[in-house]
Image 1: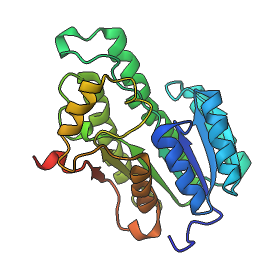
Image 2: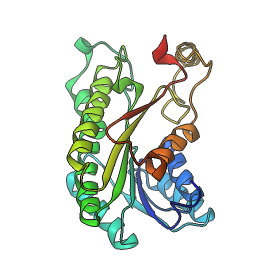
Image 3: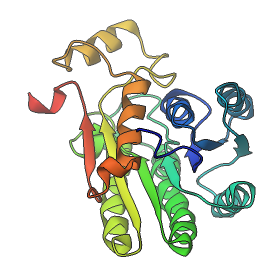
Length: 251
């Protein structure tokens, strides 16, 4: 981004693997210092090692985004370490372990997915926005999903959670539009991450067939979209969901 982001500071939740790690490394490529938040200590610390290797300051914070006290403390630690929070990417999320119709979903599974995917984004934005409004500027990008715009058959809780993320993104963007804080989301279809890895091969082939481009997305491609939305090039963009789906929604 022509050096416009260099020396600024970012927070990435779910930064210990997958899309979150790719986003952190993309920030590092732009010279941005990165705080990595994750429930997985080993993954988070490995991301920090890679970020420091890339030449930026990095910090690991172990955090369960579904717990308000931990999220509040997370943002406080970032502000103390870096003095400012210029960018936040809320990437932490989970998917159904097994697909099933709405009538078959156990409340325990519903509660778990909503707590991480939706309540987690709400809590992160709650404290990120406070910090950014006090500073007078900042950018938030939420990792939603194509399932936040369309129905994902067999995944009612996941679909509901990601639709909720899109709703929160739009509401928060409107509320913060005059405060110097932009808020957007990215909506990828299936991306090659550790979350996909356990799926049976026949399931992967079926999912791949739903993408006209003939392949899954890459974490680095999602990260590139996040960089654009965080950059000054997207200065007129707020409250939107950027679709990255290999043509899946066109069919």
